[in-house]
Length: 321
Ligand code: BMA
Image (cartoon, rainbow, N blue to C red; front, side, top):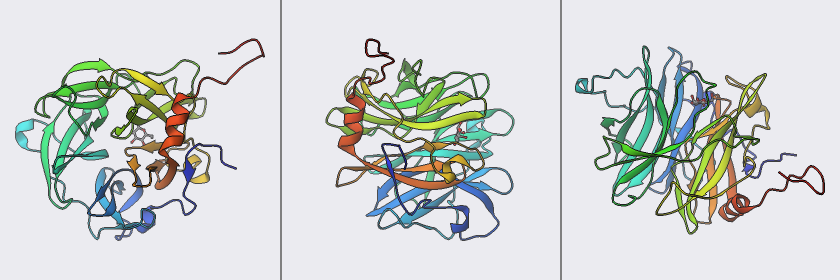
């Protein structure tokens, strides 16, 4: 019996490398951005190419459960020379609809220096345009809010330093033009004595709900056997999203199945998306062990309720956390 609050689709995983129309080209598919587009569920998928970099490939579904990859990978725009940045790989896209455009924040990887956050846009998911390189080195997990906050574009970002195990957390930043980002403010931070106590990052582009913004983010728990990636939920203030309103005290999805516990990186559930369906179900298409893509769902009201639940852990009848 699985214990996670979010329920896994029984046909998981929804996509594996075997579903790619070209055999032998890549080894893993994972961490898609997701959006509803033209009445279909569309996933913009990380495909780990056999030559060592990640490329994007779209998969589509009419029902949200049965996906088919396009015949060819995305024709990704070349990085303009005047950015001074060489893009050797792309990963972890997060898609936000804003007006008529779909904006995609993603990790832009350079083999010599590391990762910066870059931004692309599309209107039809056929032609993609470069917008800007939008951060210094060592920043990723950016997700654009679907509305301006106090007249400015707003995003989550996750600057990091040191190695993969160094603590780091979510920040907000703001922009007038989508290229230059500033007015940084701290957002969700690791919580001592919790499963997300080491580091965390967005997650999905936030969803507007009546209580504020719902953010589904990943938190990391270290162990002697490597880090475990889990998904958590928080609600932030609508007008002042740096203010936390509520936060679930436990992960809403953690690695419990074979396809999450075994793979290229074991014990990983990682998301770049959360879609609110017309029936108020939240669907998360998540990367499982950086190897395949699975689906977990929960009614919005259950996730919100979980965020407001008080601590229940007590060590004795007299004591509590
Ligand atoms: C993060 C990112 C993700 C990956 C995760 C687990 O740091 O690199 O792309 O899914 O680690 O390995």
